[in-house]
Image 1 (cartoon, one colour):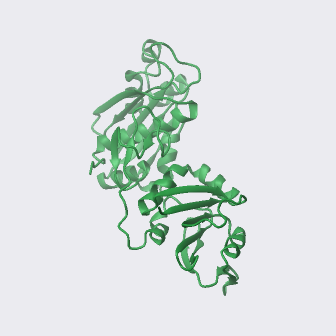
Image 2 (spheres, rainbow, N blue to C red; image 1 turned 180 degrees about the horizontal axis):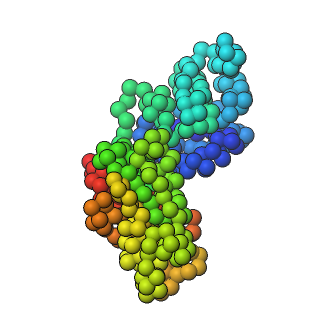
Image 3 (cartoon, rainbow, N blue to C red; image 1 turned 60 degrees about the vertical axis):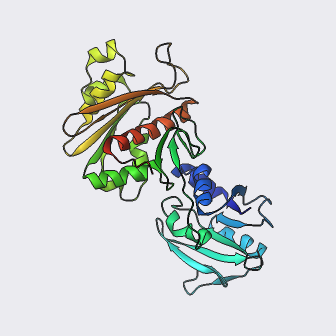
Length: 328
């Protein structure tokens, strides 16, 4: 069995959480590179010491010394004054500019990659090949889960079931940016329960400025009326979590050359009813010609999970509408 060990220090742990890269995604990508099992360790613990298998160390450069020395290697100093691993291979990364170091250990059997915190997700195609080598990558099937649960993150799973987004381990926001760029459209978001998460998720992707026009957080009913033109009669008679409301939100956010995506739901823990329980979400998409598509779903979990899963469902609905999902 080929094991991969991911060793994470405190700063990298925090940065992964801030950027929304879950351990589920790291596990899936490493499995795609050929690992049969992926284990996670804190750098300050001892679980990684003497571990056999691949090792991906996500840590500040100041922490690399204890890992390198533990592996019986030596640290050096480059001409620019930066630390280096004697006999290791340097990888130049950006966003932010930084260096990763790659070397083999245990009689050249096991690869080790030392990566400072930074854009781990969107630069994975630069570092994953150091583990996969000449092996053909395994397909990483990404499914949208109907109930919002998932092993990748809330709303997404590698387990079969639900809508297949791709079999390459692509994040939904990556697919959205690629699809919008291909279609020549930009995205406008009108968000209530997600409070800007949809636009924020798209903005994670390098190059998002080419396709993200902007977004509006219209949490209060008054904001829906003032900024998006949602009729007071709709809000009074149908409520904010309804088909008429999200369709009006999507149309109110529409701009020339853009597609508009609107979401409104009950994230909980309160606010639900027998008719609209916690987890009820409505989403709508308006195209430049004014045509509109809407749907609802009922998601499970706590408030944060429902907001996260709503974001995933909204992005996958956008991909469906634009023909960006290719079931392969």
